[in-house]
Image (cartoon, rainbow over all chains, first blue to last red; front, side, top):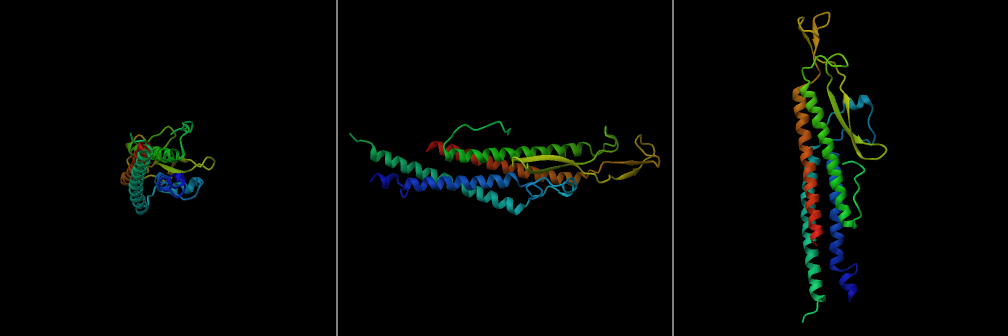
Length: 99
Length: 141
C-alpha cells in the first residue's frame, strides 16, 4: 500500500524524476548559452594566430533554439512542480486524521 | 563567479539548479570582458601613440575552455594587422615620409561585435532568471 504511494511507480516518484530531468535539460541549455560566443569548438585555446583570425561569432539559429528550449523547460518544470505539490497535498490530506 | 565560492550541501534537485546559476554567471562575466575590450577599442580608435610605441592595436577577446579546469575562460589577444596610413606631415606622430599610422580599429566592426556580446549577455541573463525562478518554485513544493 505504501509502495503504491511512494514507490518508484508512484505518481510522486514519476513527477520527481520529471523535475530532475527538466533540471538536467536546463543545465545543458545554460552550458550551451554560456559558450555561445566561444570562437572555436576546440577544448583548448587556439594558437595566437588562430585566435586573431577567430572573430566572435554566434550561431543565431542555435541561440534561438536554446532560448525556445529554455522557455519550454521552465514551463515543464513549473507544471511538474505544481503537480508534485498537489500530489503531496493529496497524500497529506489522506494521511491526516480527521476528527 | 570566483572559484572559491562553493555552494553548501543541498539536496540533488536543488544542487542541479545551482549549476546553471554558476554557468550563466560565468557566461555573463565573459560577455562583460567582451564589452570592456570593445569599449577600449572604440575609445582608442584614434590613438596614434601608445606606451608600447606605435599606434593602438585592436584587442580581441577570445573565450575558450581552460584546458586544466574546463571552466569558461576569456583572454585578450592583440590584432596585429597594420592600421590605415594617412598622409599628415604636420602630425607629431608622422614618420619620415609624413605618414601617420592610425589604429586598425573599424568602428562598424566593433559595433557589430558589441551587439553580439549584448545579445549573448541577455540570453545568459534570461537563463539565470529561469534558474532562479525554477529554484524558487522547487522550494515551494
